[in-house]
Image: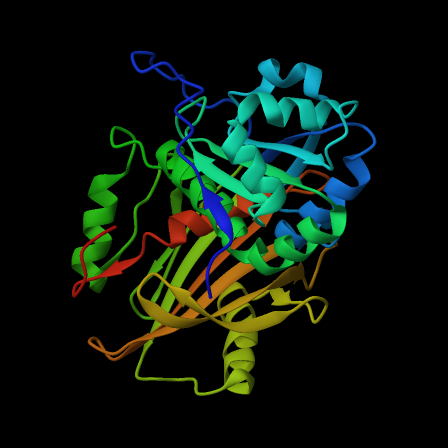
Length: 337
């Protein structure tokens, strides 16, 4: 299928000799710029692209949308994720006027008449930046395309989020390299361990390595067994549910929003398990993400578990950070990420 997202290198914005600043703002914030009249319809279009929600158990969107009127474009053009949107061609629509100032005449005509309603590029005004223009003759035509191309666009936002967060988490001067090497030599697998994490349990007998960080609380555990120990969704759910009870004792996974789906973890085919953990003894809980996969070369089943406890506060960013650490996992048969 021909991708109908126009990828542009918009050199018209930036003079050749000018150094771009590093993009500003939160990595999970998306600034969208449009007229007040277009705002409800643009929000609906964006919901096709950015539909993921984390249940903590309260619903929390993965990305925070921040609406800005077109007159303030210069104030926010250097942000990490910038979307400029306009519907129709009314000269009274200040969002449309902004888009006409950004695009060349040919680019604008293409966006209106040739179906190129989603124009995506990187690093237009700043380094490490996503920049998207949404433009078309009607809500219906743009909305239809956004449904079709939403997953691809979402992937672009997710990839930049993980890239920027990785730069923050894995500063070479603060990684715990001695501990990383110790784990690798002892168990035949490794992960990058950022500053601030301490070992909670290191048990060769249980085949469990568990690290954590407090204020707020974040935990990451890797557990493994010999052989292939799952085959279908039922065995995956059974394996996952026994993990916290067996190793954490007073913690279990809640049935509410429990989800297990086929996925990928680094280069492995895997199952991604997500949902809510809860304390058996106290009124405590929060979200978790786990990955279950089989490494054929070592003949091991691995379970990599991330969870946080941050009551009354936003949790998405923290949980994603722990999961990014989890995804640095590597074995003796692989190169470290």
